Amino acid sequence: MKNNALFIQRFAAFIVDMLLITFIASLIATPFTNAFNAEKLQKQSSELVEKMLAGEIDQKTYMTEASVLTYEIDRNNGFYTITCLILGILYFIIYQFYKGQTIGKKLFKIKIESNEGNLSMNQMVVRSLV
Image 1: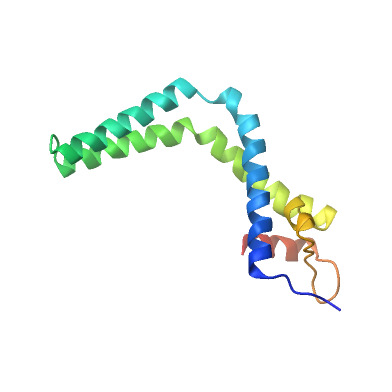
Image 2: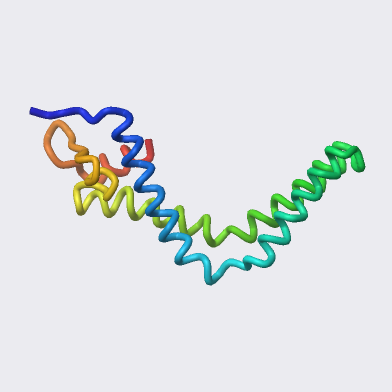
């Protein structure tokens, strides 16, 4: 008899999996991230918001400067983002295909199967992307 996992179980398993991926990505990306620059950019961003709220700059100036700062912050965090993306693909598709379930699903006793039994790689890719 098959038991369908509840949404809350699936959601909790996903949260566990995402925490694991972000932790590993942080360990990999930290040596390549300029923490001083990230802190400086966040401080500039906060100061810009304060200036806008205090009325020292108009909305157009705020939007122009905020877009430049957002770009710089994203550029600074690019390696981390790419690492998370690659780990997510490897983990949710490749690892799950060969091990049958992710660590989060294993903790919550969830196994994904098709009507015919185990999933094919194509089915795993489609389910992971959806």
